[in-house]
Image (cartoon, each protein chain N blue to C red):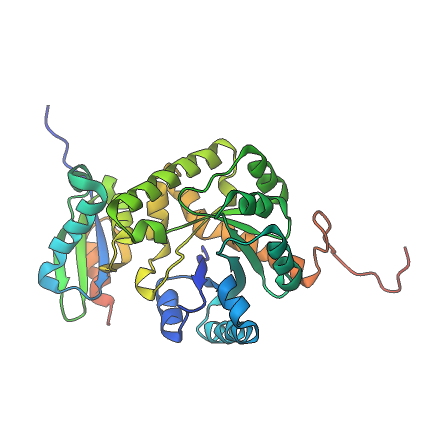
Length: 247
Length: 102
């Protein structure tokens, strides 16, 4: 049976009521995402909220994934400082592709797990090589096609179709993640409807379902392994620890 | 040559903040907004059964337009309905919908 995940829901939206709705929508897990603004204004408080959401979500039967998302334009130095400070505190670290420098750095730095594409962001050949090499995920959000003027929503759909086509051409459909990015509980939708939307953009329905289930589950498992030390560096997995250090 | 009869799918839905009497109009508006007249012709949504008390409805859509229908519901600004189950026959849909208690 598929386990559905919505990997990007801002932490401000995740009230107990919303968590219940997410469960009713047939999701098994949710990415409690902490924006960089909230993190910088109230560091201790926001990490406390993250912990609280995790415990409430788990009581609801949801697998809550902690996540920091860089959703503002930062300098390279500021992003690297954030990565140094917070990477090991959360399970997933993502960067919104808001400008070219940030996108390039997010693709290049192996500590960033997810690159979130917004309508208009561009991925170059080098970025795609890094994404493929480091096993990063590319994330698309449903929010831009739900809100705004009809024209902006249509542009977002056109952009998504082109991105899906590009990823298919490069053999990276396994790296695609589709999340809601909901700014309120009214914007939440069931995972099969989200997959239906993506299937209209050129993916098969099975592959579209994977973007809200398998691909996310795999990413979360990889991130948890890295955090727990099972995978200390890329390409090395500790299967068993020896007794007294003998060869 | 006879025109082939379309195949349908039946969506059992739980409708949220929508009045039962205007549900079909709202669904048509959602599909129309997303797919236009062409899209609407591929979906042809119609409410075939409605239980206002339980807030459950069965919506018939063309099989080819099922994904378009669901996508239209997903991108519509307000959540109209929540799809519970898709079935191939009306009989099965009614059996499932009668088993729900909201």
